[in-house]
Image (cartoon, rainbow, N blue to C red; front, side):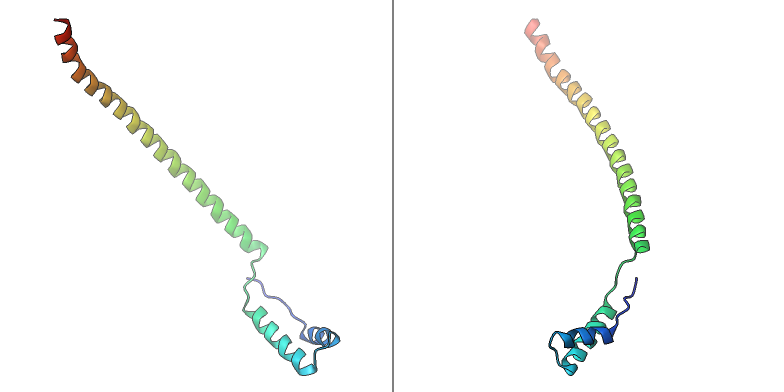
Length: 100
């Protein structure tokens, strides 16, 4: 992660020009510098790495979804044949009785 350079002297001068007293301006500058020092900023390299990770996950998920879709379609076809066979097994004797 990147760090930020911070010109405390210029910041204090800006605050004083806006009406802050010396001690107030120094306290605000110190607090701001401490807060900025704890901040973690993403660099372009960090973002590229994240994009690469996202792309790899997308490809993996696409492959997984394709595999699952093929499996589900296979099961649907099997169930269709099984249901057809059950219907024929149940209806055939009834039709035989009806026509004899």
